[in-house]
Image 1 (cartoon, helix red, strand yellow):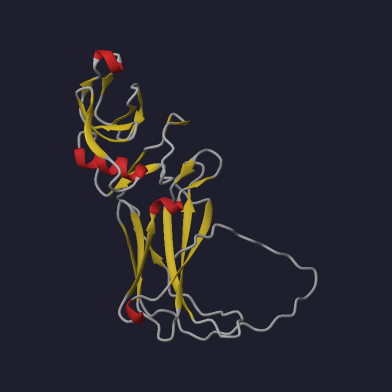
Image 2: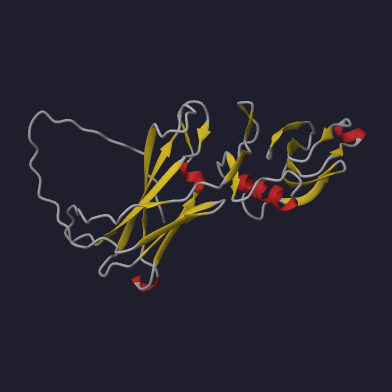
Length: 247
């Protein structure tokens, strides 16, 4: 079970606040590495003896004004249990879509992503722990190619059940690729929820009424009023093109 936290709380006190000192009981993981692909970001770290859980924190940096510079950050924290009896490298992964955030003009993906991990072993009687985090690992995001799958020209087209707004992969997006059309559809509707077919004579992958076209074709006269489709179009089966999943 994992929980994402996207809250920053700042408190200012006019006086002093007495509290029991926090105790550090476990060391930081000695090593950490990280990676990403077209779907997930992951972290791998060395186990810490005595840990009953781990806190994995990602810090995402966003460019909110299109100047290629980070001007906003958000922290995302996850808890995860030890794997394999806490022996051998420990790994955690989560969807890159978790880090998309709407600052007021539509959801955007981060341009930087960092992750660090700390071990936890809460005392039986409770109490705060100040165990140290590992060093940061910079999750590689460069090289990912992304395209909207839920919007076009600022208008909402598809309410993806996955909440994804973009489809990303680690090679250029090809509008004529059946495999990529399927992946874009599944990014929106979930793995295994898209089927191959055609809208008119244009080959496509679809989930319900939403169609991801990967070939040029024509809708049939009776049901689709002879609409024309281009590779990379998103269409409804009813039938006008409503956007693009590829450039």
